[in-house]
Image (cartoon, rainbow, N blue to C red; front, side, top):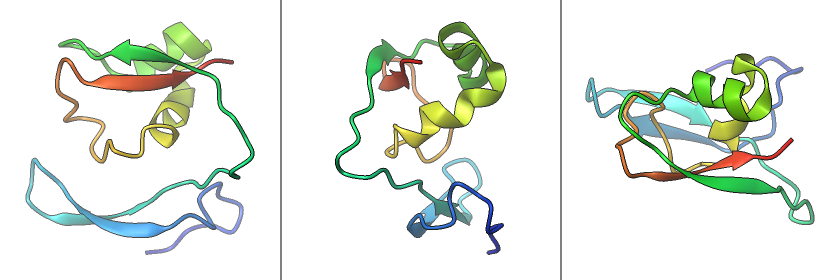
Length: 93
């Protein structure tokens, strides 16, 4: 696994996570936030047909900011396998 030195994940912990779809293990790196930083967010309940890029567009104004939603939901290891009814956090700009 190689991470660019300019990546926001360079100091994050790395884990191997099993992909529920393929059964294979993939490396995942999580971004770490300083303990003193409080992130404001709303809680959202995932519904069938949702996509992180669309939610990022609606709530953050830019579909390319989907990774910000992933960052504050470390329990989500596969953004393509989020079950309807799952409560996620969406950061407030």
